[in-house]
Image 1 (cartoon, one colour):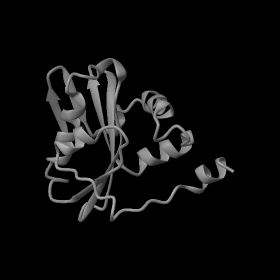
Image 2 (cartoon, one colour):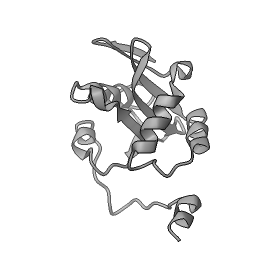
Image 3 (spheres, rainbow, N blue to C red):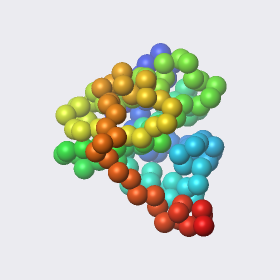
Length: 143
């Protein structure tokens, strides 16, 4: 997939990804700041990844885990702090969830602070149904 929007390009071409940008942002994030770098790199290898670019500069990212038949999990979504408020995150999420690849699959995600963004794309709270398991490496850090 490659979409041009304003001066930005959204692409699923992994060759364009800037691993330093991705690792740097995720290390500052609330959801992945305890994730070891090698796990971040492995997650990229095993997922469908979308970069947002202004020229050659990567300014956004999203990762999708999917079985391509029943569900997808949208994660690690970010827009560089200097590029927020321009609608880039909305266009990134819209491009993913309305694509032929995902539009008829159940979508899941987790967020602490972006509920309003995702609700625009028909994500709903479902606290009664979902559970999570924290990875051993994180649980062991808290001992």
